[in-house]
Image (cartoon, rainbow, N blue to C red; front, top):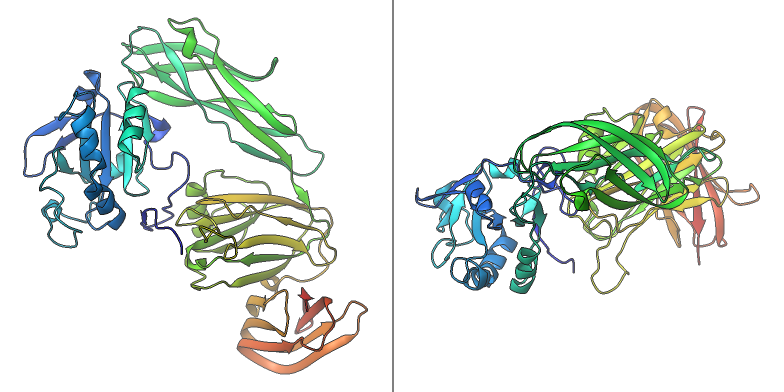
Length: 517
């Protein structure tokens, strides 16, 4: 059975649960200005003042209707932290719980409306309702539990134990102490780069988050340099005008990489008060895209038991948007560059294992497939076995060439592949009278089914050929319209590869099918 880790909201575009830093403020830095009013109307709690006093702050962002939120709350972990290192103990850290869903009123916090129960009674730390905090923290799911340190860095600790919270608090960065101390907070260069077309150069934008870790504002030019080993691959003179603790992302421009893993170090080379925090490293993997050869391909999605959580985007060219949170709404609005196909999350509403096949005939070039998941676990359904896990395969219909996408893609990821010679068939999207085409199951044992939808009356013939070109099935359907289903028995066929041709007014769609015994 699928593990329930958190409640997920899907509202507007894509809201998912496991994209790194997706639920943190911009640049992972607390933006300031948060004042919480305790349940009942008083007192107020100024988070900036707490941080300025050197106190780390734990914030539990919850919704009153959220079952996992309620379980963590009633489990008493934060109460233990409060009694050990919070105001009930040593006073090392401040703890706040905030109802962050702007659609639920504060009055439901003590058990009214759709609340899981009374959140207030017996809770020793302040409870608050705030309708703006979700946007401030780019909230993606409930519960989200974060630690804000005096240096204004924000970390999602999650539903941790009391000892884990204590360790996180002890590792907090302190207050600034220098007047001129810009620091590289994070190397944000993309972790994966795909070279396509083959023979091309691996190149990507080199980026870093720079924070003013100073007691006063800084306003000047600072040089940033990116190196792989002893080789400088990018540099820039950045004009930084930042208030204390304010952060910004700086682009150093594009840098050329080696195939394989590249340990990229970004360093501020301009002299300042503290050189020890001027560098941050991260590994970027550069891989050559899989070459599928001829562009007659099949995309096969074998779902886990939760196909309704899955969405898909398919486009030509190389990846334009590395953040699935940004790519998903672009696909949905039809604005993603080179978009060929898109399926919203929830398109496949099956609750059991199911298959989706789509044949496309592609021109030579680069292509990429996006997968999205609103639960955040990709197609990894089972907790103890892999029998219910899915698979994602892109295969060539003419040869045995294929490439696969990792099913443990979390909330969203992509796979880039190359076509080196144009396909010879016709993709269903090229037939004006057809808007869907599926063949399943594949592989087939006793039977395979051809399904398609015609938006206008068309003459259709469905045929299956064996490996030596002999017709083993034929159905001249004549003129038909609307949704069509053709069942092809495979019980008496030998194991092997077969081709199904669907002729629609002279346009032939070809699908490869494996028969197994």
